Image 1 (tube, helix red, strand yellow):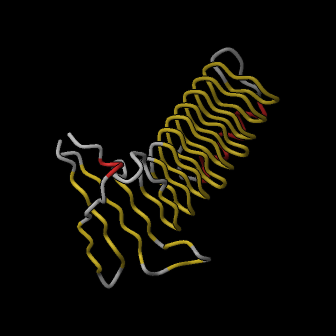
Image 2 (cartoon, rainbow, N blue to C red; image 1 turned 180 degrees about the vertical axis):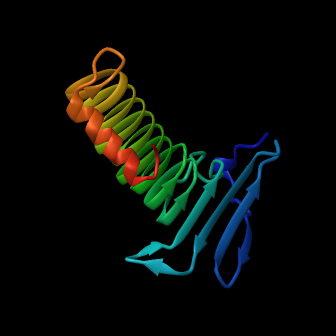
Length: 174
């Protein structure tokens, strides 16, 4: 098999009114695809989507856009295995405002490991308000919790109980 890095790559290019697709299929059947919208915001494409490894470099392209979708994604809303954005969704999600994923962070974070500045919900959660199996924060509802006001099977701080009951009442629960 020839080394594709030494050859000119012939992409299937589709120029649509909304943006441009660039696609390639390797001899093995593996695919590469990239879409960039024509519309931009602050110099970033509104939508940037990537899939597979770029045949020119042999590496994954980082999706960068207002809405970025790819294995690696950076943007306003970033969706990918590893993502960074105002809102980040992925296995490793670093969100400025909100993160959702297996290991995530943000002002508010929801995930297995949720490192929230203000709110964390997950198996292991941190935040001013932390809810999880293991919780660390100011107001904690957890099986095993550490913080100023903890509601757990071992202890029920009255301040924490009142806080979480009023929080549940705001959402029409209980």
